Length: 492
Image (cartoon, rainbow, N blue to C red; front, side, top):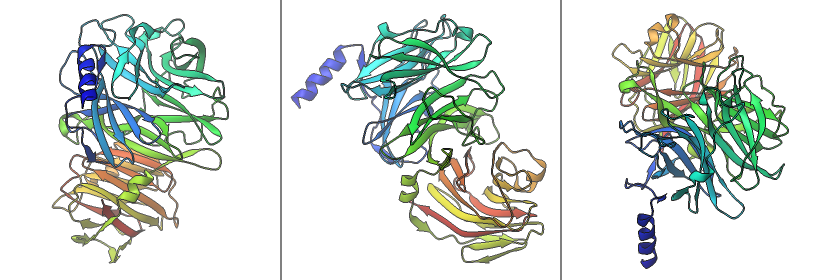
């Protein structure tokens, strides 16, 4: 007890150290978490050997002059989170170089000291962005080292873009690497490489990777991780698509190859960064909220944390799946008893067959809480659409729909009435191979207003559905002959 009092006095007496906030830091159950009073922006996951410490830019939306402190959530299994609250604050002064904090990363040195490298941002200053440094012994209380800050220099000075430092120890070259999102003088988005032996003095080693997507967009929040025999480089294109891409190489310096399918999800998942524990690879990002909490409004910046687990094929390419620990925990089976069914559909226990003649659906009871819904679609023909509908109203159609579309070879999210999807454009979509006679397993994970669909070891589709909770849902077909078998719903 005496030691705790002494430590508290030391922390209170110095202005360069700070700890967690005063909010309730008890563990809580979630699969797509936020704090309940703020939103999760860019994540910076760090595995400490036992737990994932997921640092993130906290979007408080409180109107303060400064914004986006680094905050921290801790999890062991991606189903329960401990909120450590704010750990690195912004400086609420007009011309402070860290008037706002940006994305970065955490690394542990050979002596066990933790180092956070992050972006300091202030639109009132020139340059607007700096790379900044802080240290910690416990990952919660941090000391800023302003003397270690540095800014971009030629050729990385265009538009003051110099941010998102991703630092790791590269054993292949026995040095620390820092990847930085910046721009060259074409101008074009590039990922610059800096190296160091001591995590204090950094040397510019030139461009590691230049935008190869036919645009000049910035490539935000880069990560570079070795998994198996390959190095994987990820980044998020700031425009126009705003999705997380990846490249692969046999050497950390490249050359980096673009796989045929170079992304995992649509724009409902952003700023994903790679992290790995002793066995598995993960991609941690966020799904945005929408203005005023309404389904028909534009998206905000920040929302809920979403994590995909990534699997590796024999050729080294990656694909997203639900986090194994999450699906294992969601094992309490619920009884699915249809409320109504209409059109040409036959049912037998957990199996349903749609004839393909016009529109047909099966409506299920209200959804609430955290859920896992699984099943297997098998289309017989090549026409029509089928899928899952939510916020089902009195007319037995939903206003929010996850739609399998064989003609377009995609799975899409339609923010419109089920009866109108043939004349509407989807809000989000991902390419998925859909062939007659083949079966497609799916897993849908739901936590409050976030729903993430995983399709047949191919793609994920992360969505925001405000009208999903506490409303009926269902399955449907419009002019598609398709069977849905082994439909299950489960929870904790």
